[in-house]
Length: 324
Image 1 (spheres, one colour):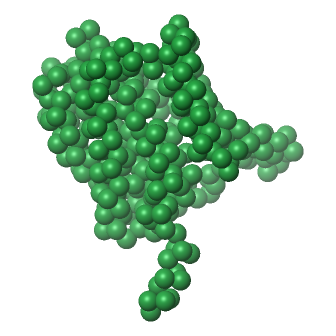
Image 2: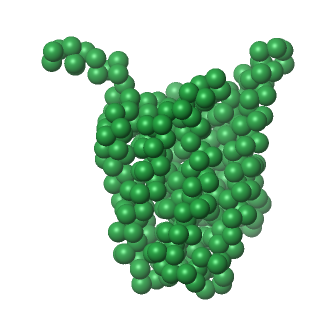
Image 3: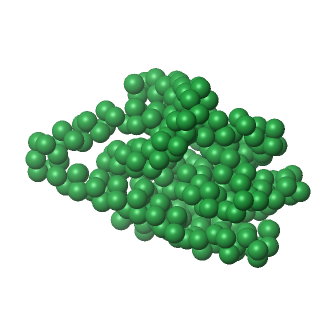
């Protein structure tokens, strides 16, 4: 399954879309399943990360500084420019800003790992990215839109996502790794979860798409205007991520992780925020989910393209020797 995982992910996206569109009544149950499925996926992901490397990752100040500057200085400038294209529609504007201003803290670790990125660095950065966006999102919304919206955003969903999707799976993964070094049962759990990585990713993609595709389809005319903005964001963030990593003199694995961090957004975490907005902004959740769909396709493309744009040191060495 790992050999054919990209094709399988595309199948999951298409299958989820077909099921969600054919059975609209399934949207509610599927939406409730997003967090459990995503939590299992992250638990399996964290199991594959050596926790002994996290301390070193936290101390990697160059990587941490690069990720923070990219996400909270460079990205807001890009997002402000892109958002001007929908500035005349408040719901579209709020949705675009809400999702593009918040860096991903969950499945970015999965996709970055698939592309050979430094997953342990992104794992170490996740709490810091989460806290930073909680503090800075109201500020950026205040600057880009105005004070009237800031009061409608509460930190509760952010904290819940941090605990349920990051901290609990992380603690369970650390315990399971410790258990596997002492008991055969623990090693069996590790083996089973490793085998379930691809099915869990497929399930997450299918559940997210299936839960929202019908609502997106009903509002497709309004949502068409944000799709090019999301696609443009994914394209723009590749050279910006590469340039940021080059300035910090990061190695290929860290460079790939930086690119993924700058490009992937926190759509699954901000969705509860979008759903809690008042009735005049009822379209905002669908604007957020539309970004999820565009991004998932973009991430599958990234997994193939980024390793070619940022080759490993082993691939670089022969060329360097030839040129030397």
